[in-house]
Length: 247
Length: 308
Ligand SMILES: Cc1cc2nc3c(=O)[nH]c(=O)nc-3n(C[C@H](O)[C@H](O)[C@H](O)COP(=O)(O)OP(=O)(O)OC[C@H]3O[C@@H](n4cnc5c(N)ncnc54)[C@H](O)[C@@H]3O)c2cc1C
Ligand SMILES: Nc1ncnc2c1ncn2[C@@H]1O[C@H](COP(=O)(O)O)[C@@H](O)[C@H]1O
Image (cartoon, rainbow over the protein chains, first blue to last red):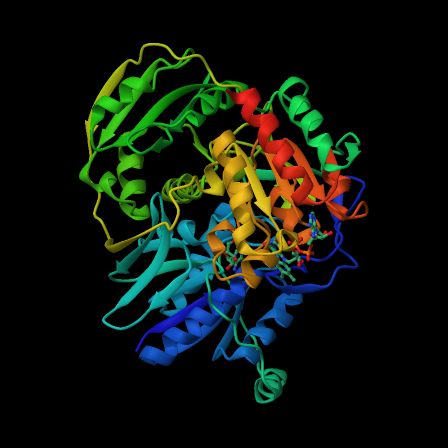
């Protein structure tokens, strides 16, 4: 019966307006949520447990601010919630985040880890494959479906379409949206989540070699040209060739 | 000068054009690049010579016949010298670069769109802000396409390394993509339709223009959710694909924030919408306030005569 870990990250709601003040993004008034792809990871982790038994532990790396998303994961149906943190951490780079998560995963005795394809803040997609490498495990990224009969088989995009890939041994699987419907917390789940205890663990992280210099609003585009009527498509086609040089 | 290692982007057994852009990125970082070509047939590395590159290493291995992240990373790591690792910001190369970085205990910066000395800029919060970081020491970096100029080709000085990696995943079955059309994630030009197209059949008007331009056809989430015939693989946006083409044509798409998240970094945006107040117009370089019914035939014939 597999020991399953799902990685969840606290991020600003994707509808939030991102304001820059000075040279940093100001997140003091955004609403925080579980990163959207992590919801698919939770769903697949729960389906895995339903098929094979075992336990699902939601793991996050973050300060106590992240307890809320762990409790949200608990309300959806995970068994255990764990947060890895060390008060000496300030801005961890990807090396730090992955090292610390890999230690926590090892200490939890996990055999399979699900995570999001990309986090809504970084958009990176580094954590799944990076953690897998540190654990010496297989990884498959951006999966859109999974089945559990006769071992783990996942669907992942390839050059010519998509591939069904079977995974032997321990693995980190990063999850895309696919056609999954994610379950929502029910009343019982929400009650249980209220009483749930976050298990806080520590880990070591190497010092950062990537440091944030500044954050800024996206470059403003010059105002575009606007035309009325379908016949203007002819003029636009000409501009695409002569002004924009893109065709 | 410090060293860098470019992981060549390959596509259907040949070197993809973005590789030449990675050479310019390596030079912008002030590094001297070696190009690594993962392959099953080392002859493709002959196409990976560029001005400014003194060495091309073909890493030849059976493991490169199919994509397995772990074996690719192991084989590339074993053959590559040390230095800053540079890859294209495509889904597969970002994945490999993340594993190679982790193997070497390095950090990784993905989706770089500007380089200034050791300062790298990438979008964060789905492009709602930009972040500049500085590197102290080696790291891995993935670079978006269509950002840096392509370095000029020159004769490649190729050495071949035989390398195998233990494959830990196995492809059971390939499910072919329904249409033979280009994937939006790979296209330089994309024409997308939204709910305003009225029915999935009307996407044929977009396909005609896509054929003229060699473009991919994309869709909004409303189109994907409403019509079974429009697959999720076409969806552009926050829960679809993030694209960065030279030209993005949005037809009958309102321009919701989640759609913009996937395409706002396109170099040029054209919008066709009958509603003059549709939010997409604030992001369009060229906006046409009209129905698609009256616009697309004109656009198609104008483009056809220009392209022939
Ligand atoms: C968590 C979350 C994630 C999401 N992710 C995505 C995503 O990845 N991608 C995405 O696209 N959306 C996403 N959405 C949905 C998004 O909010 C919008 O609902 C969606 O983008 C709207 O699609 P649309 O513009 O095609 O449809 P609509 O908003 O219905 O707009 C249709 C447009 O067509 C125009 N129109 C109608 N008839 C014509 C005509 N004959 N000719 C020309 N124009 C016409 C109308 O004026 C209108 O502007 C997400 C939403 C949420 C909450
Ligand atoms: N601090 C974190 N805590 C828990 N999981 C994380 C953290 N950072 C990233 N992840 C997981 O890794 C995925 C990809 O993140 P990223 O590599 O930043 O795009 C996320 O969707 C999460 O599942």
